[in-house]
Image (cartoon, rainbow, N blue to C red; front, side, top):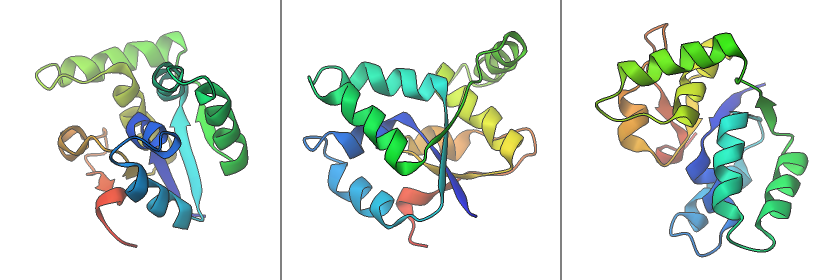
Length: 141
């Protein structure tokens, strides 16, 4: 089964009808029949953004459950050390913790297709295997 990594931006845009990216994200994710993968830091970041709306946290929980979203912890001490190293490598961007965990998860699960609105970051970031990310919201197929 094909899989996509899911970043914070599209997750929030999917849930927030007022977000300018909402229509395109809903269309793209609505057509997706594969697996969605993310990390706890992405969920934490998304929960922060959607909590501005009363129903936001419940909508996020419902999306995670109904989509079968697979959430990887990525907060264990060795993983934190790895994430800090990746963040240091991209300090000039800068890279946040959630993005660092997605870069590390890509290598871990061998998935390099990502649903993100961070085109600049994920066009630049490289997992250890040297692969490039395919930004699935920018393409069809």
